[in-house]
Amino acid sequence: MPTYSYTAINTNGLKKKGILSAASEREARKFIKDLQLTPITVSLSKNKSSFRNKVKNKDIVIMTRQLATLLEANTSIVDALKITADQLNNKDLISIILNLREDVVQGKRLGHSMKKYPDVFNNTYSSLVTAGDSSGNLDIIFNKLADYLEESASIRQKVVSALTYPFILIGFSIIVIFALLTFVLPQVISQFVKAGAELPLITELLIGLSNNIFIIIIFIALLVSATIFAYRKYTSDIDNLLHAHKKFLKLPLIGNFILISEIERFSSTMALIMESGTNLDIAIEESSKVFNNKYLQHIVMKAKKDVVEGKDFIFSLNKSEIFPNIFIQLISSGYKSGNLIKMFHKSSDFLKNEIDSKRSVFLSLLEPLVIIFMGGFIMLIVLAILIPIMQMNTLSLG
Image (cartoon, one colour):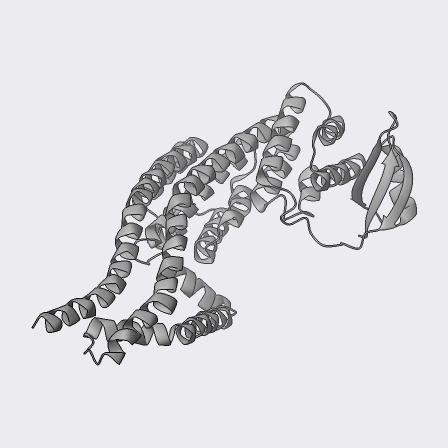
């Protein structure tokens, strides 16, 4: 559907700008009038692309919390969307909300309409809204989504804050090392070479590195590019993709972290969707979309097939031998006792604590490791300069 940019005046005489989707300019003008706006200019938008990077996470959190509050106060979804759009500052998000409102007015499901904007509302978000819309629990769903988004934003902020200093340190160290290798070391060593001094092995190795540093950088860039190209070509086949993603889960140090992070996100999504009254098979299918790892998604979809065929939900998960025992035990217990939602919550809480623990250990070790590694490399360069100086001093004294 074409996208139109418009300028209009509201009932207070204030000028408003926005973007909306419509089948024609005539339909676009009609929709603008339905919003109690008087259109001034309506033109086909040159930017028909997505809203990627234009709508930030904090804007989504604010929108979600406002909708939850309005729906709790028994405001209709049509009015809630209009009020929320009026209170936001992000023009792109305002345009999206007004487009969603238009769809709802026309009798479309809000969650289904959100799927038109995957760069703004991910699968989890739109699936939960669809489930809440079907069960009549949109206010509850938006509240839970707001809590979930706020918690995710808080965790992300903590990680960014913790990583800021180490990355600044790495960047500064790289600049210092590059400057020493490219400018300082060659000039200093050239004086020793002119004097006929014999250079130690460490100095000769660093001179070789200094003389070929740009070639090495180009080689590394080409190697990385070739690796990425080869990986994409290899994983273009679905079987190879599943095999590669299975291997990722078994990588040293980070494999287990990836695994529990993926399963925690799946557990929390399952709990949220099932709380909205969605059937187990549909909840599994929608929740599987949160997986970045395609092998895990493949296993979970097998479990969904088992459920449809009347088999035990946990059978395929257990057979894969990849899911943690605590997850299998909790979900198996919940399935047998009829407390699946509760057990998915427990699984999410347990795995979340484990993730926090692993993240804290990693971040606490990162800074000293960076200091040791970068400091050690700079020390090598300093030694490469000092050792010849000491040798020359020894010879002159002798």
